[in-house]
Length: 545
Image (tube, rainbow, N blue to C red; front, side, top):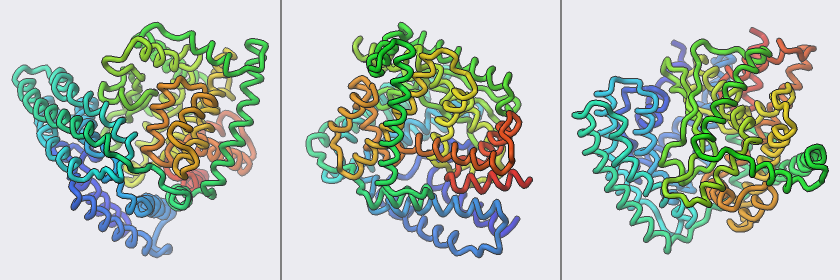
């Protein structure tokens, strides 16, 4: 083992020990019984350790590293630098989700992937459920009303209430053996009581919360340049978003003329939205059908290579996710497991949603838009990318990723499938173009929210008027952007960077036929989910090989 490999191994071992829920997501089952330490002391200790690791990786001599090791070193540095940039922002004192998500996703993932026998899963899940009161108590101590934005509290409140039902009722239903079911039900009741207590705490915090989500232009620009390694600052990114919005709006006008003989593309899209599956389950069935169609298209055209045994299942979204996420999502197979089964989650309405809310959720998943979303989440979007990336031998690349690649790749997948003729119906093409415009609108809103140029209500109005979203969906979207600075800008930014990277790749090779396109896809996706500048270096190494 090289000295760099030893350093990376030690670093990752410390990361997994500090974040056992993440380790479980990655398939490292030896961490399954533990829940993350969410105390103030633990957050402060992790920050100090991150700074030490950042200095150690930066101090490595270039001459001592191979080409792949240099990429891995720079991935570690960019990840740790991102943490350093956000450290004094102390998100753990602002974000209630910090204290809900480990106990929820940490249990959900165990039963989703089922990497261990049921008795061991129950033991691990019960241990995590019994640790939830400690995590909730940490949240009650750590959250500061003068730092926490009210929108964070309101977003978490719905999730906390859904979490209580999940722990009390739905987790035991995952277990077949009656004795084991009783054991997990007892632990679930402990967790449910803690989630209910947290909901009551958040209800009280809501009136006092007066914090901001505005991280500021300087911090946003540093994240773009030092974490994402992009040649852009906040102003440059927003200008790109506005340019792309104008370009895509003109494309939508052309589709509106073709489909309905009008320039009024928002009206045409609104009409398309009214043609949707009648129920959440028929919506899931439509997604399942289009997921298989996309997979078959890729095989027939030879546009990508498929790992043997890969599988993508289409399921309703987890109940605890429904109050905070109004769009489809994907859960990859654990990176360090042998599993190649991914899960495409369809955005079901929250429990107790009104008939009007259910209707709005269905409208946002129209027959015209379902093909595009299926490509984005499954083939050759997130699922195909991430099962392909599993073969990369680097532990660092299997552990760390950036949305600017993962979401950029998924949006690129939509664009590529449109180029290749997958969307035969002009209504499907128009919906894919709308998906691009939606991501351009996200760039404008995200940069504006986090620099203070837009209020929450301004952003909702923009997404309703400019991105054709129903008002409840727009509110859920903007709440998400407030909670996760720079992520909403990742989709179109990453897509455009990948398109430019493809152009340079074809220019170097001198051809752009199907074989060259497949090689580009296989090599780039197989490099992991790196910042785009590092992905280009990995692509060049792949060409040399």
